[in-house]
Length: 596
Image (cartoon, rainbow, N blue to C red; front, side, top):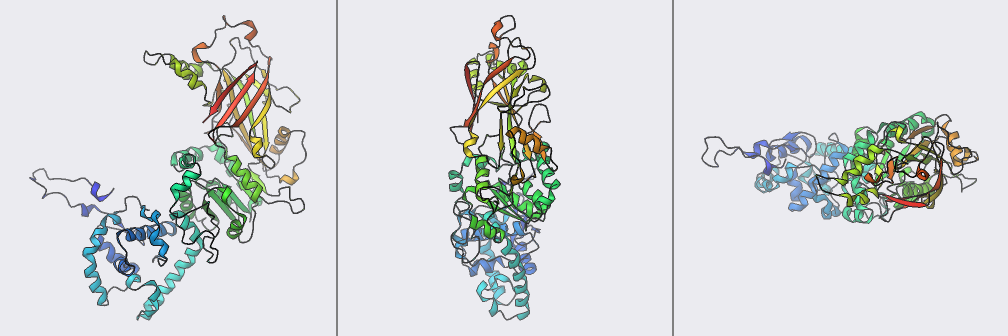
């Protein structure tokens, strides 16, 4: 809470403002170097000066900092402390003039930082501090400019400070580029590789003080949504999803040992940390959301910051030379791991980014460069579609509009019916089974066949818009027909290298065979298993109350067990970029739905 927001407490018998409690007594100002808290500014300054040789007043004077320059400096040091913790002590390098021009550092690093609200008190304290320093009291780092440490007369103190600074610098260099990302500040131009600092960050990945411009260019709404914790809580608490990634990585530690791993869309970094714990030599974690700042902090707090290199931006903007600098010479990676799946599998259009990373960075065969030797995780996925009969769902979600507190809202039913409902129906609501486009046998009562399967080693972006033949066998009598279609997907993680995958009669057979091998992990979002945060996609064909009764349904439209419905499923990218459009053509009619 900011100091000015503190409640003003008046004694019951007061007649004016004389008895207002002193807000300063309620302040809690954190040290710029350690985690200690102090009740007021003078005590804080004395602590920093005596315990850490950090004289804020002298630094302000030496660098001629105005009000905004001081804010930038404080936020810079706060961010340094956030990443490296309190054990490092001492200030980082502040001699670069670009620091004082970075508008991004005007944003507080620590929420409601009380120190920033006390800066007007520094003028009152400066005279006393200056006189004390002139008298030779309170030696500190800030006592002289950074470039004049050698002029100090106290040789012992200088040596101590130089040793301390060397320790800080050693740690700082390991993470310098990552700290720069945290601050959205670039001390060097992106194409300046002479210093070796942050040279691997391309203009499209990170630009100093231009976060708003980056968001506008790279799907602001989409990436912004992943900056909130709610969506990450939903994903991390989805045990079907997270357990599958963990089990595949931990059950195949030999596959990850000493390997270079790329995590596309790393989010909070859970998959990167799994890979690091499994023995990966280096993990390149990429995300274009602000959540990556938290991911970096989480990795540091869990002792994995040396292994995981976090970078904010789009993987499409990462270059092989940059990967080489991150990995120490490698221009490719051994494994690409990503949780890219959306509703109905392809919603959010993240898979094209993963395929881009595969084509440019996944290790290829030396003998046959057109073939991959690196591993995709997941490696395969498929889509299922089945007819749905759920009168209760239709009544609750569509009939609702017929009577809203006595008003007829039925004009909204068409709008409600044009979008895919994200919901997991009961297993008994599934009333038929699809035969896959390459399956030779009709579906049985114990199995469903995929209507589309993807091998992620050879899938292209064009493959993600497709039309598949649809052949569905009804598994029970449906005297009133069915209410719509249910779409779900399955995922396979196969440790088998792509060059070792034999030629199968169909992708569906390939998926089924690989899933049985040692080390393989699968999971499903189907109505027959445990619920996931993806649930299922329901394409409803009825308009609520128009659902016909058995005695009024024409005999030609009544369905019986083993009846066959033929048609096509078409899925394509929506007009809004990351949306999805689904069309199902059967019985001479074509219906469409949006996933948005």
